[in-house]
Image: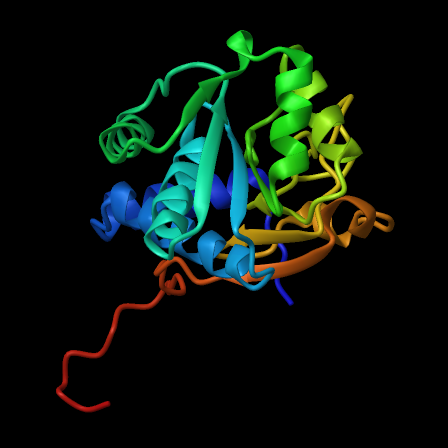
Amino acid sequence: MEYISTRQMQGIDRWASGKLGIPSLLLMENAGLAVAAEVLKFKPRKVLLFCGSGNNGGDGFVAARHLAGRAVECAVVYFQRPDKADPELNFGVLERMRIPLLVWGRLTKARRRALLRRADAVVDAIFGIGISRDVAEPYKTAIEEINRSKNPVVSVDIPSGMNADTGEPMGACVRATRTVTLALPKLAFKRKGSRAHTGKVVVANISIPPRRDSRPSVSGDF
């Protein structure tokens, strides 16, 4: 099995969007759909999603929409409004769908615990592969509260707080039941002991084709 580094994955993303012209919004849609499909395997009635402001959070917003479309009651905890175009678009869709969007800073500790108790499953879409320093507040507390819950936890691409190259926790790291990693497994997953944080790893096809160095034949023959 091929494992890739953060730098390699970022290069593949740029190649897919820039060279092939695959819209980044389509990749986010495919990622969120794959996450929702894994969450549904737990047969939840209520799902609580923790979403960051970047593309990982955007994948979570898409997953929430698909789960709601399957009659799953969803609530999203977010930390700040998305700062990129694709996540912002999907955040706006959830607003118009009137899915509860709960900003972390306005939730009391008691309210957060109640939300986790009522949920049948949790989606971790806080951080992706780009994290390069120790997890700071309020994200550290969020990760600790997720880890204290007894719900199945599905992480998007990589457990939030895990260094995608070394597999080391960056101060705090989600302990997932299942990790839906996007396109290819990350180098971190080769590290001994990483399974304690990733749980079962599922590789999701998000429609990035294999990269080929040679040009395709134009002779008309397969």
